[in-house]
Length: 271
Length: 294
Image (cartoon, one colour):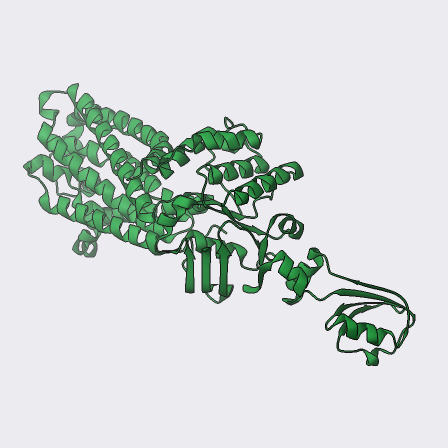
């Protein structure tokens, strides 16, 4: 690992990380407090409205009963679109910095003028990416802790289940980042790589929605990355989602290796 | 010993030509000029040397290390200023110098500061607030701060004022005198003439010359200006003289054979004035640029 490269990457992404972490902390705290406090009163009425139930099922990725129990309400802050979009946006921004960002900006000549291999750059960037992902998870954890501290006991998630959801979310973050890294390695334009990555995760999100209304989509639900992120199941069962975690981590690692391989072999030209 | 060795180096961009079968060697401690018109393949060659582009065929080596597979190893002793230099806009000069030291794992700050003083450069200014010339100076400082054995400069004086260009030339001469090698790409002929001991000229992706300036001068045909009292018929031109311009009484051309032969031919006619001289380098380079031969 090269200290200079790590420092450079940290310097470049700390403002984005700070902003995203602040947003995640604030929003998670708000959702963890507001939803149990207010939604509980209307949960029966809401659960009886078909489209709302379907919408909730789509977001949670699981069937829910006629009554929104505490687990449903507790899992909602972990699947809210703002939370997911912020986590994904951070992964995509961070993982398209190099090489697409460097080529786009024209600084790749200077960077590769240093005595560092492309794998050195890829490794150092990955370290900072994983580190900043942990910062985001810590922000979510703190937000959830703070928000749920202000509600009645039955709406406080069990600490171990909270950790499991965070682990699931973290591997989801890595999988999305890995995809962005591959697109970055293939592209000379950061904007293009970011757009394609964002469209891919958006489609994945929409696919889980479609799954609720269209049976062929249900047959191929496994194609969506959100299929492997199920906070409601974790809150319900309290078991480690081994299959989901294994899939996401293996997928993320494979993506990262492919991205590094592509980066190390491709021609880089700024003009 | 050769610092840079290119062997039949070819690099194409799909169907588009980059460089073709370039064979070249740059000796140690030399100020080497790499000349050619825009689009001739200078920057492509440099990008292959730096490891940004993979050769389509052939080999490029620096310090006997392969420029693609061992690029990161050889760059410890290489300083590089790209043609279209872009730096990280959020840093200032001192921060970039510090970062360069960390990445290179060397203390470069003292030399960097020395160079900054010499270039009259303020290290506290953010890159985004710098003019093009200032950025170019910073690029040079960053490339030279670790005192590399080989300096690869792709049109480094673009954006520098004449005074600064002169200072850079002086500095590069000092470096070469101290045993460093400078690979200097340019399309400015006078600059290379002033600075370099040896030049390679590329045209349409091919090497058309690789010689010392003195060799180039000697090899080039003499320029001949003849002012006639009464010019002979053009059909009677000898093989030793190539007519390039005919203004009636004044003929301009190149001597192709021996001077004796030319004089013997001229003696047969009424000559008012005669000038036979070596061409200046600018003219010589232009011949290479235009025709690929002197």
